[in-house]
Image 1 (cartoon, rainbow, N blue to C red):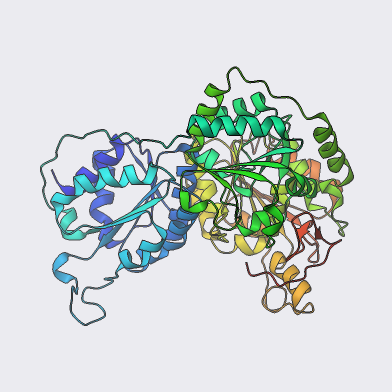
Image 2 (tube, helix red, strand yellow):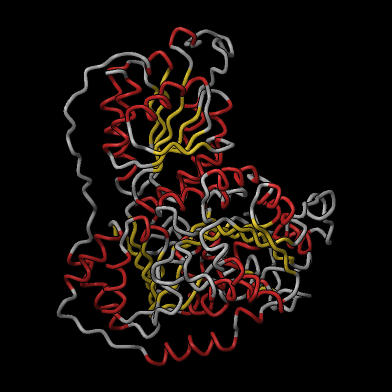
Length: 572
């Protein structure tokens, strides 16, 4: 069998239904084989970074590795940001790059390049992948593909890169029988579980923090059984906003640098913290980690190195999130846990005292009120995808996610330009069901070319551009630390009228600038004409609208701007 035919049919056998790519000479064999030998849909993007982001979202939604292809040289290097996004946010993905023929590679020669577009993508991608494979013989490919899928999905998921020279792609191989490889998941010990039982029963202010690890393990059902058994309130990280629906009785809110003020206070004041699938990074805890170390913390993670990394004194529980919850729920079948009524009342009082819609008093549209309005009228959406910046935090603070809806964003990489191509990947992963992309004006301009991909594929992607005519989060940073000198955020920066841009692509579009227009505008997105079509809604936000609350950097997480002032300059 021709190697490229083998790769294509192998992907199909592993459940891959879509691949994302931008064509180039070194992947033409692969593209032809996918077209001729499989029913896999080839989704042609307009930039390799977009293909990588689409594969990222596809992998998050399905649990099957998202697949993106790129040619050698600039095609391969353009994938790197998306590869990093998959690596930091625990997304299973397979990236396949074409490479120049083996006889055109420089090898050990002391030269920069031999073949046209020859580039050592393996060395570049190694730090941001779980594994990289440089194919030197066609006979290595069957075992490499088996290993790649296993590595991408086992333990903490992540990306794998395979670099295949063009002459290898057109070679012939004998296809071996496939052996199914099952992943073994780490589990907690019974003694650990009994200790957790005892500490839950002693706690007066228990709290569970869930992170992306719960979603990546597809452990939502098991997590809810755990919560309903223990009756512990739950807070979420940015990447787990959708782990519990907005009206779930035990849900407190979103924590972190721009978290809900009431959730951060509860997070800071709990006496027992059970962390599952979150690495407790600086945007979740703030800089003052000592503040967190005065309580009992169980940290559940499948990667031991993530435990007692920043926050010290945690009790390690080395386990996959799903295995932890399943083992706990089974072992706790005959255990009884009491509701801490005073703790519940206190948290609910904080919610009333610090509502998210009153953190800002902007001119014109209040972005948090808009996000609630968007939620109320977007019950048909299967997924919200937020880009990176102020709009991302307004969305996380106020989005009302339903039980069957997802919320996806770029967390660890924090890549501007993520949402539009990720919306494409999510839409395909959900069988062309409607998704909502929430994006700022700065982010929109990074991968705006993918509007054509949406139009060509007739995707029901609802694009909300929150246009404040500047790079708002960095502009706010300049207010805090640079005496409001707005170089490259407000000064020397412009954005187009996105309504006109959308219409140029053939997309229905509308703009609003007042709160009185919000309800009708969001309903317009979902009316009979637009329900199954792409639309763009431009929401004009005053340029000086800040993102509050925000951790006062250097202080404990319970102290947030604008009422508390930072004592250190942020380093991240």
